[in-house]
Image (cartoon, rainbow, N blue to C red):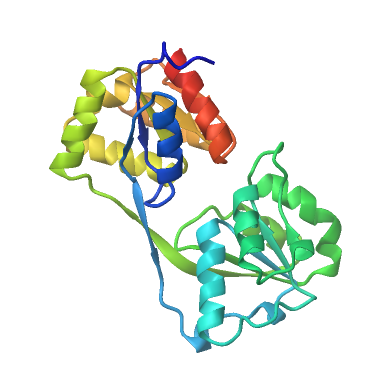
Length: 271
């Protein structure tokens, strides 16, 4: 697809350090990107006494790449990360998070379970992969942030498993500065439309709160959106309904990897 006819500005709202490579790729395609993280990820302290070890569980589920990163780092700090037990499986809800576990070289690849590229990257898809193994499991640890979706843990408990939750980080809503607000408004006014990437329900809330606080809800109504799951699209729609806008936003839904996001942004910018 030629990019010469594309006139748009992209806003990337993933946490810091997750936007940069995609921004470079978009710029090369003629789509300058503004980096406005919606959330800041902050690891939580964990002492040796409070850190569950892999050998105590049949399965450890990492809900995100950050969950895996911070847990493995904590194990290493406390001298518990030398050898991943053969009897403990690791699981993630997505390909990218699984790849981070593999890249760490801490967990054998054959012990990592995750949905594939061509399926939904979510808890439902992961559960379908786990179901044949559940009869041989009794204890599960879910490594996550301080807040998160409870569906998988609750479903595993209903299946008779003992499920523990371990918070390794917190998501803190970012408050855009006056400079960031000015950059956003310039992007909106200079090269409409704006295509805005949202990758979690929390980011929808954080971005919308920033826009309301800065008195820029007109920007929200004119924006096109790229999201990585139907649930995020539904949460986005609810903000439009709550604000009195009946017409649904223009939303492209894609997989969470950079290649899929890039293609979805190109499509949204070209419409």
